[in-house]
Image (tube, rainbow, N blue to C red; front, side, top):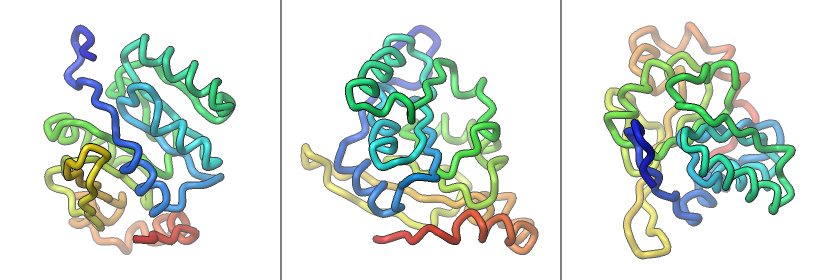
Length: 188
């Protein structure tokens, strides 16, 4: 679905990808999962079903409404927040995400890069199919989706993967980095 002045079309994330990602990261209560361009909300609704807080950022009012109805139908409306705005206009830091999910074009990811770098050290950034140029992934996994197409999950950790962190070194943010990740076991 395309909306006037939207540079990112909505393409649903396959359930197998979302489930693998959340199983691997152990998404649970205490997590805040932010989906940039969340479409119908499937990612944040799945996060909420696992006990996390989900924040859907979507510019298309119709898709925001779909997310609201679906969250209510799944009984997780109290764990899902919907921000019906352009994600470039949202202060991501104020949401204090533990995980940011983005299924966006490389050019959009590149434009978002400085905003992602500003997130708290230890924040996990997960992208689908497209890497963030200039960042060093800590993990990449190829999966076959329900239609038999290869999909790639890329994982990054703010304070380790981003360009400014590599220039500054990990020692500058080590305490914040460790406290943010100490409970997380990535099961691959």
